[in-house]
Amino acid sequence: MLVQGAKAWRFGSVLGVFLLVVGLLSWRLIDLQVVDNDFLRKQGDVRTIRVESIDAHRGVISDRHGEPLAVSTPVQTIWANPSEMDADEPRLTNLARLLDISEADLRQRLKKYSGREFIYLRRKVQPALARQALALDINGVYARQEYRRYYPAGEVTAHVVGFTNIDEHGQEGMELTYNQWLSGEPGRKRVLKDNKGRVIKDLSLIRDARPGRSLDLSIDLRLQYLAYRELKAVVSAHKARGGTLVMLDVDTGEVLAMVNQGSYNPNDRSQLTAENLRNKAITDLFEPGSTMKPITMAAALETGKYVVGSTIDTSPGYRRFGRFTIRDHRNYGVMDLTKIIAKSSNVGMSRIATDIGGDVIRDLYSRVGLGQPTGIGFPGEAVGVLPAPPKWRPVEEATLSYGYGLSVTALQLAQAYMVIANGGVRYPLSLLKLEEQPQGQRVLSEKVTYEVRNMLREVIEHGTGGRAKTGLYSAGGKTGTVHLVGKQGYEDSEYKAIFAGMAPIDDPRIVTVVAVDAPQSGEYYGGEVAAPVFARVMSDALRLLNVKPELEVGEAGKSQPAPGARG
Image (tube, rainbow, N blue to C red):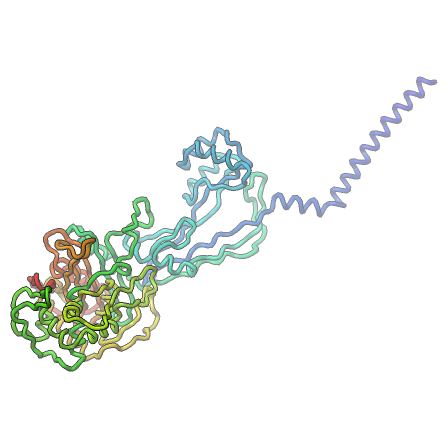
């Protein structure tokens, strides 16, 4: 009996324990499925539902005809979660080779940042490469979409458009100036991920991404290519240090082309140098030399003391101011005002300057935009130097009249010539395409600008600018040759060759300034080096703009610039 009782007791105990366990498990199941269902579902969601950002692409930069100059293309960025990874994973060898990164560095970073959940492996790669990386199926390696900036015209528009950094923030040019305008606003969305962190499903949109706004530049890409080709060719042919070319729309102040040498390719910055980054047309200053003579002549005509037929005796071909001597190439004797400009007579201009005074010349220089911003709003724009001494010395008046003692940018020089070209109105310059005529300021009379334009015609027809003839179109302009400034002052053997002009001369459409630094081919005058570039660029540009030809085809005459005149 005792044995049977003990057995029954043990059986009952085991059965009771079993029933208790079953009861507890049943209660727990009911608790999980009914009582704590909402809580557990939320906890599960926390582990699988994530909020991700939606990248917004940067706005497109286009030329005036809608041709893209800067676009953002979708790419992939490979990243890793070190907390999920094994730094000794054998497949990391293949991953490092595929991404072209150091395997040792990769393993070291994974160990160093093992407590982190995010590090970049390689940013902004082609989608095909990202797919290959993910196909290695390494735990903790992921990819996400980003955007990469691409510049279709490359080095041709580099100095105007600029570039962004890897995060698509503007660093140079219009990309920097209009960074906020071009930048998009990222969006946010909820996504469902698996246990490897891969997105399974998009659940809901929290905020849609707002793309950056587009930017239409005033640049005409056709003219930009043309200008770049010709400037690069002349710099190479004359073994020059560099060069600049600016082309303006006479009636609006829009910049149609702006190029520099040397340049750089914003799509490949491996060879980028600080020297080539500058937009020299806007940032670099120089003495404009004889290209200022037409402005000085306009000031003289404006006083009423002189008319086109007035004459000046330039004998004996030089003037002395103490230890300074101003010379012409030869003794031209008595000259009228047109011939003074055509032959680029320093003596003639200096006599006029002495008569009308430095303040009168400086006043007009200021009115046409020298010594002040152009209104273009480009980063790093230089305003130049326009002297204003309390009392002008005779030599200062003389040198000011033919472009020494002041400094300008190529863009400012183009703006000054635009005033002569359009009948005396100064417009603020623009690198953005304008939808309507800007508000200009009259600074010269139409009569004076008409008379000066006829003088500029003579420079090309019978003066120092013979190589600037544009074939089927009439043109006018002025040569300039100035000594470059070095550490010890003016360099005796280095010059800047300049030509500034407009066409067609009777109804100008375009103003162009060409400047070539330190040509080493033996030719260095503005009429020899810069004028032929003007001729080729203007002739082709006017045809591209459908301007009706005025002249018959003929061979352009060759000029012999006067060394003393530095024309």
